[in-house]
Amino acid sequence: MDTTLDELHKQGEALLIDGKYDQAIEIFDQVLARDGSHADAYLLRGRSYDRKSEHDKAIADFSQVIRLKPNDGLAYHFRGVSHAKKEETDKAIADYNASLKRDPNSAGCLNNRGAALIARGEAEKALADFNRAVEIDPKYVATYVNRGNVFLHRDQYDKARADFDAAIAKDDKCGPAYQARGRLRFEQEDLDGALADFTKALEVDPRVEGCLGHRGTVWAHKDEYDKALADFNELIRRYPRDAQAYYHRAKVYLRMKDNDKAVADLSTALRHDPFLADAYTVRGLLFAQLDDYARALGDLNSRVRLKPPDPNVFYTRGLLRLDRKGYDQAVADFTETLKLDPGFSKALVSRAAAYGEQKRFERALADLNLALKHDPKDGQAVYTRGKINEKKGAYRAAVNDIQKAIDLDASDKFYFNQLAWLLATCPRDDIRNGAKAVEHALKACELSEWREPSFIDTLAAAYAETGQFDMAVEQAEKALAAAGSDIKADVQAHLQLFRGGKPFRTAALQGGDTGKKGPSRAR
Image 1: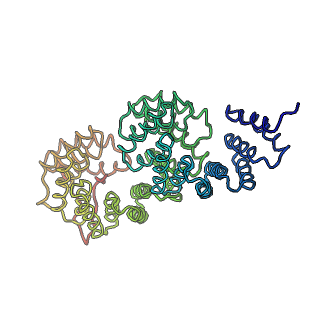
Image 2 (image 1 turned 120 degrees about the vertical axis):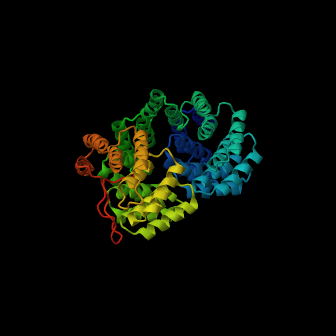
Image 3 (image 1 turned 90 degrees about the horizontal axis):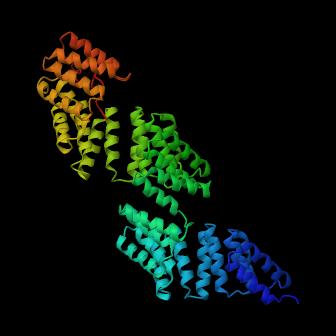
């Protein structure tokens, strides 16, 4: 006896529930071959296609249901889900609106519209949907997770925790709820709690999206690098084209100081996703640390072209250009940083340093005074102001500023070295103080563990100022033995002076020009 359409439909529905989507589709094909207007068969075949991530076919089937049954709110809802999975947010919201017009009390549709509104950046409207969904169906677990994520994004940790706890209380097998609570605990620096939640999420749902990566990140922060790599390796095995997985594994390698593997993973991440902005930033910073200026600048240029604009990227590129003496470009980058974030005090300080190199001293001081208005205890701003005053020839003000910087942060070796250099080599007799210069230079060398040749050269100059030329020669010879090409000629010149019983002096200023200086003492 032939199987009836109703029996076939029930077989297909059972196969869909069991996750046997291909077989379900074959059954619904048979139903539709016999009755091309069977709306329920289109609906369930659409659901089967959706579960297989064949969203265009799913959307076509749901559209057929809507053509046959224009008032079927469920078909609009499911079509909205498929549009959302394709990241067609506006179309998804339009379908959810149509569905809710037909069934205003669908908690599931309200929850899904809320998620789509989040994707569109409309958090307040999303919260209204989530709140309404909870009122309609207090047992709808996904809504608590979604609403909790909104609170988490807003740093409203107590409300987020309450929602995640509520979701778990209602369904202790809800992997996304454990994962969300793990993210909350990670942000609160509760690494053990986060690790427990991510592990539980994977226990109840081994394929919960992104959880391996989250747990891997926690392992990395606990310095358990083998376990971190194991999680990211498994994630990459499952999803070999997942750019984020390679990006986060690269960050583990960075913590391990394995730069070659970090670069390799960042490069792979960018091959899979050329628009992964953070990967350009991190790789650019790594190239900068490796003194590969060309590739560092190339990556930062690539990141600058992407949206959204990031003030930190302009700032970092500005630092690179400042270091390479590209002062006009550095000023432009720091200016763009400040347009994007007017409160970015470090950009003010760095722009002042660039202005100082251009001898635009008044602009430099204006930036530094503004930075100090933001934070009067900003030691780097005070220190930089001291260096600008030194360049201007305002030596007393320079000494006062650098001493104040030391008072604000007595752990900074550069502050001590700069003050020692000024006190040892200033062209003005009333500023020099050899004994204090030796004291500050020794402190700088101690803080640097005697690994900075330029600091040892400063100590030699300080000893020369006190007339202790044997000590000056001894220290200058040590500095020369360790000096790089950037300061070797200067140190050699100083050594020759000390051997002849002469101290070193910076040239007196004329018309705002600093004249000849010794090796740069700046950061």
